[in-house]
Length: 257
Ligand code: IPE
Ligand code: IPE
Ligand code: MG
Image (cartoon, rainbow, N blue to C red; front, side, top):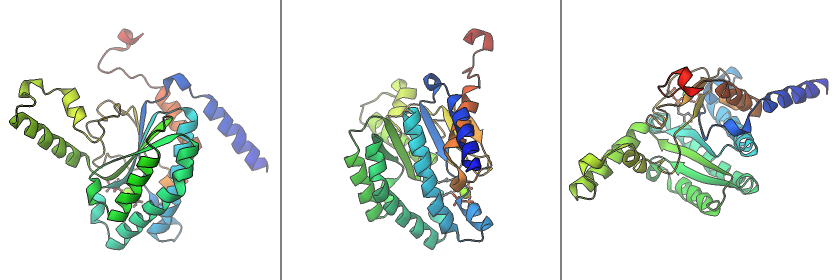
């Protein structure tokens, strides 16, 4: 009881420190540490993935409540296909059940689901479920939740270069006209703004082939918390930390004030 009270007071505190007019327009998260979390508890990795999907719900709701407009979650990388077959299978199954289970959360919070990555590589059942939920939520406007699935940034860039090359070959674009906006339009993230804040959990400090182009000027936030333990409070802490930073975009501090 007393502990609950302390938690409640603490949570009020940290949430109240957030300036809602300075929220990241696009928050991206590398949800890492499910396996180590489970191992620490003497359980199988898959148990960590299950717990991890519950953390997703917390963070998605947290973002919707705050008014963050775009949240992108790295759920499965192109490199993750190289994991043991059974783990990949379990992750795909979990994806289907989570999508089914969370339709209500998405609708209740006016959230639009989106997906980026080499989606055609997903098992048909996953792909279908994903497309169904995207269709059902397509008119929602509060938050765009993008799942990066079978996503690799290099794969995305190769895909963009191929598409642009074909257009150049067919005289649809002239090479001189290729600029940042042309590249942006050919990425999976074409309708999303640049990432403002990138969070990675679990203590690893690397990007692991995630949104390389889109994080060019993102603020990076690393936390040791394993993903299954990540709560709304951790989200608030990351945003408060982000809001204290000075984003100079190459200018001097004096120029900004
Ligand atoms: C992140 O947790 C989830 C996925 C990559 C699918 P991990 O499974 O990478 O957990 P660790 O890094 O092995 O602890
Ligand atoms: C990155 O995590 C991919 C996801 C979180 C989905 P990994 O655990 O696969 O990354 P590395 O291999 O440790 O860099
Ligand atoms: Mg990992």
